[in-house]
View 1 (cartoon, rainbow, N blue to C red):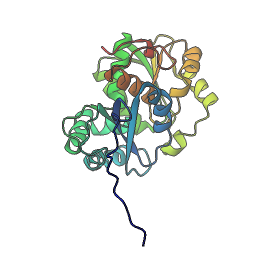
View 2: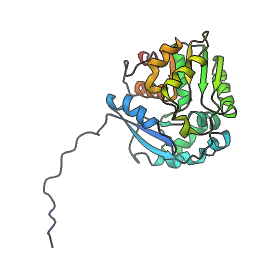
View 3: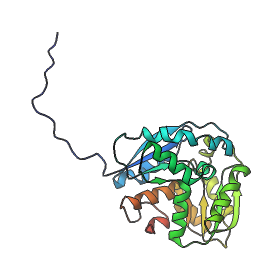
View 4: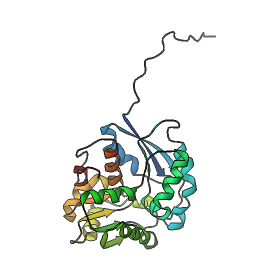
Length: 253
C-alpha cells in the first residue's frame, strides 16, 4: 500500500482570488445574467458567485411571487461565512411583484447584513444619476406583469411617456430575442420626448448592445443587467466607463 506523506511545509496563501465579491441569485431558467456579468464585471476585479432559485414559467405575478420564500435558502448558499459586497436578486419582474423591501428581508435571512440590489432599484438609481424625469419602458412581459412595473416607476417619481410590452410568457424565449430585432423594438418603444429608455428583464440580451440601442433611439438606454452591473461596479469603488453607454460615464449618487 502506498504511504501518504503529509508535507511539512504549509502552503502560502494569496488574498482572496477577486478583490470584490458579489452574490447573484439567478432564476433556474436564466441564460443571460452570468454572461453579461462575466463580460462587464470580472475584468474589473469583481467576482460574481451565483446560486439559482427555482422558477416555473410563465412569467406572471403568481409564479413570480412564489419565489419569495425560496430566496433566504438561495442566499445562504452563496459563499457561506464569507463577506460579500452585495447580493443581486436577478429578476426584475419578481422584484416588482414581491417588492424590494420583501426581497431584501428574505435575502438577509440567508445572508444577514448584506446589501441587496434588485434590477428595479438599480434602474431607479441609474435614472436618477442621469437626471431623467420622463422615460419610456420596454418589457418582454405579459400585460398583467408589466402593469405593476409601470406603477413602481410612477411611484418613484418618473413620468412614463410610452410603455411597450411584447406579451411573452416564457423567460427562456425572452433570452432568444434576436439582437437586430431588439434594436428595432427599442427604437419603436422610445418616445422622442423621453430622456431615457429602460429595457426590463434580466433574460433580455440588451446589456451587450447598449451602444447600438442608444444610437437607434437617440437617448440613454438602461437594461436590467446593465443597470445592476453599473450599480455594483460603483458600490465596489470601480469608476469610469467599464462598458459602452451613457450610464457607465456617471457616478452613483
